[in-house]
Length: 498
Image 1 (cartoon, rainbow, N blue to C red):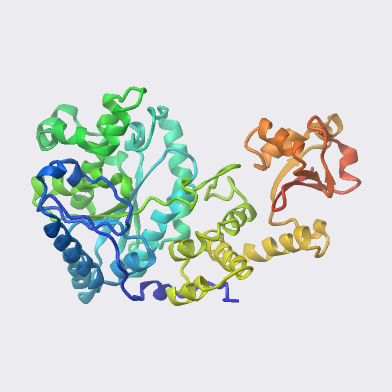
Image 2: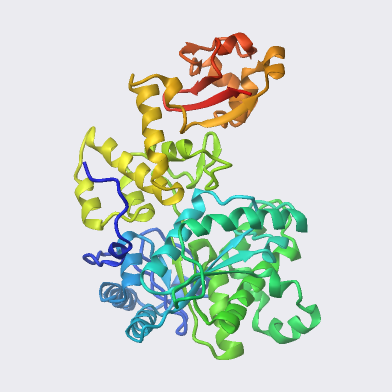
């Protein structure tokens, strides 16, 4: 079995053999993009394109696609090679030109600054944001500077992309709390400072957005955005087609995101914006705003939106969001999330969410049958170590051995499990087990906890729970200081007596 230790960061920049991808032909001369998956995405360029009856011939389309494929195959900058070979690269403006700029900076011992934005809509990021964090990590390891943009300003508006209705308006206090919560996770993946050209920085767009003079902003930048084009964006079309109203407040989000790119280029020399493919339209607007206002040559690169093989959105489980902060989700539950990856997804996720060399991952791709489970354990170990460190892995494996493999006593190895505390007074009065399942994140609601019990999947220690009105009392502890609640075969939590 392949070692679960993290490989040196330099291995992530190693190139591998080129791959063949289905590519889209750009329709705006100043914006060239490549689509690195066969899944078709409506870009802003396409949104303005004429109907198929007036497009160029099939031969021309094929020729353009061939050119883009050749550009991808000939990439030489370590960062873009890594993006391509590990499956991060979906679309990019002026790909060959960006490749040259990255190489030129490296030859001069300089770094290209690139940014990625994260709105403060919750007090922790979830695993759906991990793809973007990994992109920033690869960028830094390949000799360039990551800029983490916290959307303290844009969070006051709310990104309408992919939403059926308006986001809940957040107070300044909640945004500040969320900003503090999401900021700390980046320290685990990036090196911050001001000593080397590659040291990451973190900025907040509230620093400039909240001081904007509305009339002056309209006069300076409003003429560079047309309602015709904004209405053509796929994210806007989707919202307009639904029953919930699309407010003018949300409509302005794409303008603010575009202005962020201009401001970051002015303040920090950012040349490249990174993001998910659902942000492509907003990102292109930023590229064009920089060119029109400052004559700046800017670039945008998107990663694919990650879904599981059954079409579900990455980062959600039956128990809720898979949070990155340990105070929201235990190391054990995080490990189990990756361990439960489907057979069809494990190789893809190893490329995206670990730093294992591609050669080792390709070896695992040939594994069949029970060996696939070994690959899932490698994935779980590597991904968990990146976020929480290697030290937690021993406790996690000890817990699994004792609880699910008949190893040593469970009391000696519950360290890796999520844990809540109850007082002796609370236990004496009795606490409903369904409430404890919810508090331990073993069920997302009381209704789900009842279904778990009724389906025979809930246990208190080794005893199956059959009554959904059952309570935990002092007798339940049997003289011990803690008891274990189990949900199914692989999920468990601890109730400890204080």
